[in-house]
Length: 177
Image (cartoon, rainbow, N blue to C red; front, top):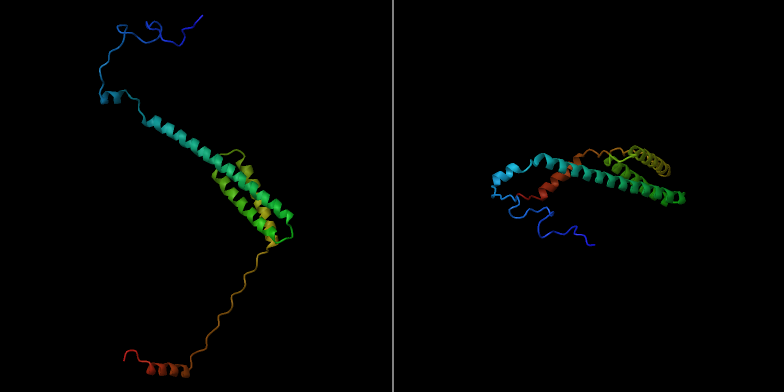
């Protein structure tokens, strides 16, 4: 048994399209002004659609920033792990410096992504790791006290013989003469 479902009947019976003379509406062309009157107001609807798109884009940016911050935090943790293996060697401070920079960048990105869940936990944990790493780095490289500036050396006062030699030079070289 064949089904006629989905096919149009040539007689127009049950297909939903009126045939000629079966109540078809004949319309006259409408003007642009009439068309404008019939159109729904677009201002508010468009602003809602665009506003929703903007919010979705901002949420995507927040998500991207949060994931990027997670990556920088993991990078900092990796540098700290390497630095622990190099403890006592000169390269330890290099890796700790890289870790501090990575944690700092992660904190900046976490602050930018202000709508992500567990944001405060991530910021606290990253700040704690940053502070511990900075403390270890300060232990390795203690800050040097500022060296006192040398006292200014006073030049001796010109003597009369110095002034006389200047006068002698003026007499020998006369550019205006």
